[in-house]
Amino acid sequence: MIVIGCDIGGMSIKSALVKENGEFIKKFRLPIDHSLSQEDMIHALAKQINEEIDALSIDKSEIKGIGIGCPGAVNTVTGYCEFSGNLSWNMLPICYLLSADTGLPARICNDANAAMLGEAKFGAGKDYSNLVLITLGTGVGGGIYLDGKLYEGVEGKGGELGHVVIEKDGRPCTCGLHGCLEAYASATALIKRSKESMMEHKDSKMWEFCEGDIEKADGRTAFECAKLGDKAAIDVVNEYEDYLALGIMNFCNIFRPEAILLGGGVSAQKEYLTNAIEERLEKVSYGFKRTPKVKILVTALGNDAGVLGAAALFLN
Image 1 (spheres, rainbow, N blue to C red):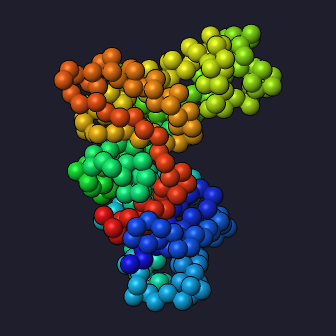
Image 2: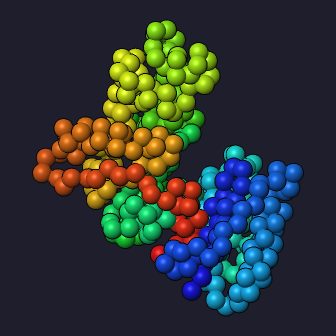
Image 3: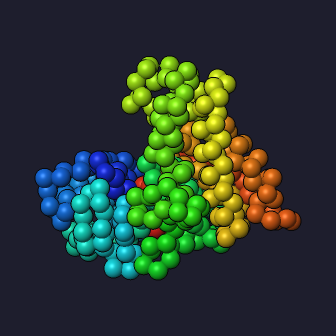
């Protein structure tokens, strides 16, 4: 059996024909063309899918369907992308258009949920039945996998773990609320705090790391300088890890997963980050006494997670 997975991003749509075991048959990519209407962009994707199937001489009867991971507000019942700010899409019937153009059934989910499903089926979470994924990038995304199934909530709009409030009347968040985990644990938040600290500590090694240009500060700056013993950087990292651990502790209490997976740019710190989070969680007994340990792991699939997770919508 073959499934097609499509991972829609801000710059391109990554797609692949995938075997049931997660093995790739063929990967292909379609750049996002903002000069096209939203409907024509999906027609272009369908055209590419048809061409790839024909080029491989695959009979469509061998293909179970097309799974799509899409950023923004996605309705898994209607198959619509109801809103995606980065793509400027509104009420786009993705599943209907793809099915009409290819003759194949289509299913859709949020892109973070697709990444969760990919890691659960084929990646770092494949040995577990209860998982939480947290992506630490421009924002903080989330995915929930319970008792061997992706949990999406009503209309597939659950799993917004980045918008749990961890600080009353705290930092403003892009969602309009204040004190969200995203405002403290995203790479964007980390970079902002790094810059603030650099302005307060002109002798910090972070300036040297950024070659004297504060605009070169990124998600690595504080971490790499903390490893060198820079106090200002250590303070930034400690604060970041405190807030991230607080959010994760809440997820431990709510879901009691076997493992929590960290993805996104900040997760590139790997054991330096996961060990620090585990130490903090152990101090509070993973939420309360006599509860099982929750493993903190880094995702394994990288950019393939979304494509494989989208394909797994027909394998779940």
